[in-house]
Amino acid sequence: MSMDYSKLFDLSLPELGRIANRITLEKCGDLVTFVADATINYTNVCTSKCKFCAFYAKNKENEFTLNHEEILRRVGSVVKLGATQIMLQGGLNPELRLEWFEELFRKIKLSFPQIHLHSLSPPEIVFLSELEGLSYRETLLRLKRSGLDSLPGGGAEILVDRIRRHLSPRKCSAEEWLRVMKTAHELGIPTTATMVFGHVESYEDILEHLLKIKELQNATKGFTAFIPWTFHPGNTELEFIERASATKYLKVLAISRIVLDNFRNIQASWLSQGFEVAKLALFFGANDFGGTMFEESVIRATGKDFKPASFEEIINAVKSVGRRVARRDTYYRILEFY
Image (tube, rainbow, N blue to C red):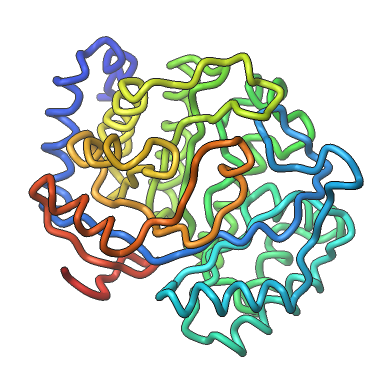
């Protein structure tokens, strides 16, 4: 018998937290994990020009594209800090063909074989496939052979096309996002799933998003984690929107844990919420603290204060609420307990 998940939105925050926390402890115990990572945003040239984005270049003078040498230098810098995972994400830049990425991935793997390349979101895959006249499968296979290890869940926002047409009409559809992920899973490329909320969506839209990724996870079991975070309106076309409250964030996080019973890992988002709310998130469904984010440019572009998190800051934050803590790799294998 299918459950009426819409009734969850009527529950109080403490009640949702109680249910979500019980599920988390049953699935994951009291261990909270984190990863040492960095996001290198390689270009701000973008044909999509989404209304919620503060990162893309609004004019020619502000455009940039990092060359391979600069990207390798940045990878080297964060490897020295202990990073094991690199996320390469950027705008949809028609100047960057598939061969550019293949060459880049090979260079990274040659210089830093220990690094896990968790890179290129579904909109980038869709864009590259169309640019080259290739199927998603062919595009992903070529990238995998060049060194791509896993795919981040970026570009999902809300997987409801009515919302997508309003926010990002030039970006891939909900169905295309899901199809890229399904294809990646079939090729043995694990992925994460994400959701950005707190803009123009309704609770019904959030639930539709969750049920779509739940259905795909039932079919493929290819998602390693789910990461919901709140929209930051600063410096975007949606500046007039009031930022989602911590209460709404915790409510949606808890509901995500309850609905996504086929996901083991759900990440807290200290990057969008700050450390204090991220610590609370550990009692509302999250079993992972996310990454150190040694480098990141997209959230920074909204004007939000941002600095990377050190191992010590994350370890102390988790221990301060009575949970055990360990550093993991991208596959959620434990590298070190603290």
